[in-house]
Amino acid sequence: MARLHESPSCSTIQRCTQVPQPSGTLPPDWLRHSSGAIGSRCCQSKGKSEEKTERHLNPLKVLHVVDEVMAEDSIIVADGGDFVGSAAYILRPRGPLCWLDPGAFGTLGVGGGFALGAKLCRPESETPVLALVGNDACWSQISREQVPLLGSNVACGLAYNDYHVVAEGFGGKGFLVTRQDEDRIEDIIKEAQEATRKGKATLLNVLIGKTNFRDGSISV
Image (tube, rainbow, N blue to C red; front, side, top):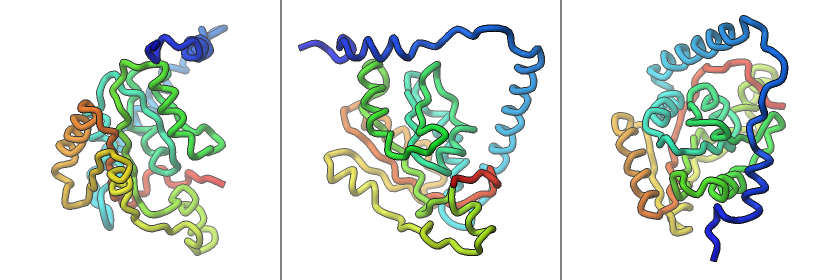
């Protein structure tokens, strides 16, 4: 049986996803301006990551820890709204084509397919899947603007579901991470990484609070 990376379909995908060479020239100050803007936002997120949220863990702190311990061969598959929006400012893809997200139209649910496709094309990357759920029990990307405009959080509030239990039910390994684990976030992530290396699909159900980072970022 052919290995996954020898599949003709994978070769086709790889050819279609080659990084194109830029045409023309960039404005002379583009790189400086972009680097400055990114650096400023990174500093802002780092500062806010040390603030205490009203309840649960600060999502920015969680993301900074993830970035520090993420394997160099990782492919980031981002499937979500508000938590993913913050992750885009903090997590550093380890190389070209190593960040896959739902895109500007918010086509949620692409994560599973993206993860399978990434594994097909790069079987040598960290395996199997290690999923991190930023669980704020809310459609926060919508709630951010809905509450100030309409004064109501209707249809945005959810429940703190036990996603880690669901993972266990499917034969994977699940971790619940709460504020009580704040000083152990890095250790728990490393434990989850070790579980994946032993062949277990793993999920971290991280209960997170709210910050004002990215205020004004909306989804309609």
